[in-house]
Image 1 (cartoon, rainbow, N blue to C red):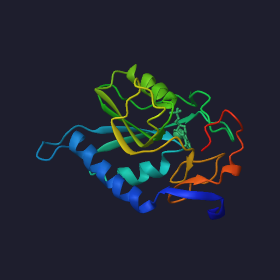
Image 2 (cartoon, helix red, strand yellow):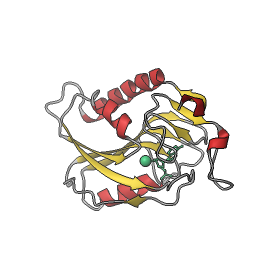
Image 3 (cartoon, rainbow, N blue to C red):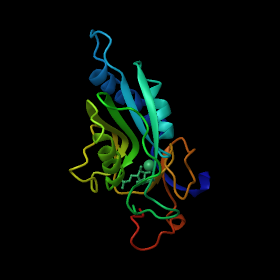
Length: 192
Ligand code: IMP
Ligand code: MG
């Protein structure tokens, strides 16, 4: 696996530090110090890319929360270009009147967050915010805001720390760019 990596963009150490900072930001928003038992947070995490980020983030959030998982796919196979987000099953969590935080690995074209947000908004939650580990600011559209962002990155197709290419490399501890010849999506993909 290591021989497939062209270079590391963000090290596991940098990720861990930033996840701690994000958790502090979130705690400041949802569980301010000195307030009486604040309401519960409902986290809606988008699989599969957010699984490692989610696991690390929630263990640093010392507050009452429920976690719902939703599977969305927009990158079939070896494509590195979004083909439109598809929700694979209905979100069953009861979010009416609740504070909802959508957690995803990366905000790219925004299609995924837009689809999940719209689905949740129909159920009258008290609030909806979004938290992504990575954002590609060059592509992220203004109508899909990310309220909490770990890192802004250039328009690379990255893998590791939960992010995959063709289902592989999710278990890399760092966030990395693969050797260019491994991306086989061809012209039109946003290969880096
Ligand atoms: P969007 O719908 O275009 O914003 O894409 C978001 C989803 O596409 C993320 O949840 C990822 O699963 C996937 N994605 C976008 N960019 C990358 C990348 O650079 N590497 C791996 N997956 C990506
Ligand atoms: Mg994803």
